[in-house]
Length: 160
Image 1 (spheres, rainbow, N blue to C red):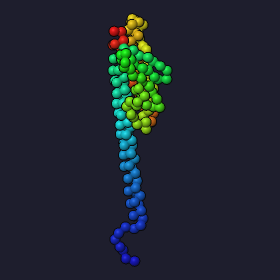
Image 2: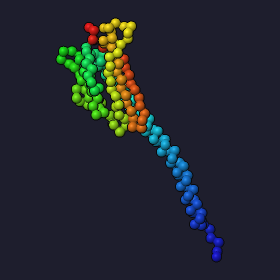
Image 3: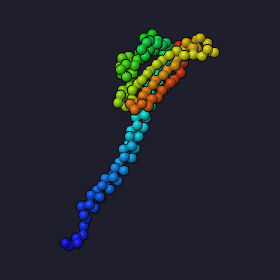
Image 4: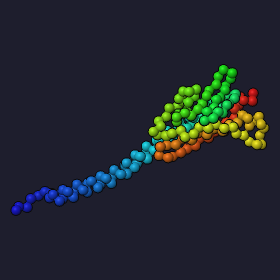
């Protein structure tokens, strides 16, 4: 038998196995990195949503003349004799006057809670405490990360 140049079957199989292991070694860190980028993007989207809700509601609360806190995460803001807005959390969406406010993707995060409560300071006057509210919004990603957004609000028009 003549000596021929080239690879034997064993050499080819060994090369394929080594290349497969090297490819797998590169793929695992890349998949991990892409999942971290996706999670960071989800948290950033959720954070922007939470800040928008708190900012809008805080603005509306400051300008309201009166607030009625109802049961089941519902409350009504009265701006004048003719204008009011009704806020509630329903089926994971924030509704204002029964219309969905900011749409969000429930596959990324859920609204766990939206609460408004009367607050105050025992050292302050009753009039001040009647116009002071505490707002809490809790959002949670599908992988379990949870963030709470809070705001203390004084109704500037309540005691006019």
